[in-house]
Image (cartoon, rainbow, N blue to C red; front, side):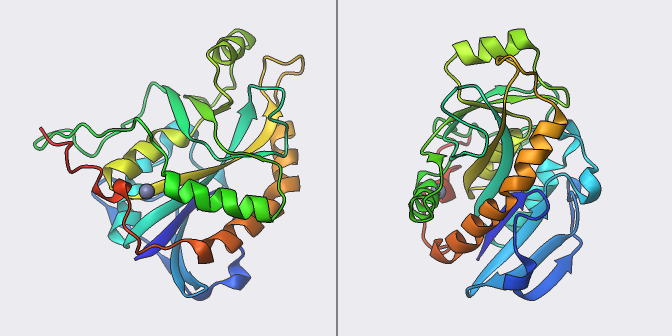
Length: 259
Ligand SMILES: [Zn+2]
């Protein structure tokens, strides 16, 4: 069994891993975003996929989400921790803060969101799309590290790659959502279908367009650069605490889903 990490470059510390291998995996849904890095950290097997591929090759709409999740399942991953950058829709969610996302609202339009299209049709429950058990482990560690973080948050997932208009941003804010991002869906949904626990570390990089200053890629990159060390520390210290053999409701998510 193994723990999966999906995120950008620099989210893990290669120096802390042993028995490192790079695997090229082909799946029924094509190739994964990039080579998978497999290694050991504190006795746990871990599998890492950079979501956007080397040199940020894939736009949010083109990330091979199904191949990535399929490959993780094939390699025995039972828990996934993902890392994303998010825009903030609330004053109190400040750039540099972390949010352990607990809900999403899907505003994507072009993505394949299921492994169950033909033959055996399943309707999986995503009423609570993120694994609460895994989220608690993240919260416990973030408290210990004295990070500025938020226990939960609702993320609006937009198609991208453009940022929201001011009108969209104000609308999302009026819905009571906390953050906005381009990649959580369908990743979290596919993980649920694959019966893998999935928790998310969202790093707030900017206030979305509802605030006076329109978000630019430069803002996002500069906050990410300043906080990547904190993400890495959180991940590297939380993994030894994750019990990848412990059964969770997520690991039986499809039990009552089949037609
Ligand atoms: Zn779970």
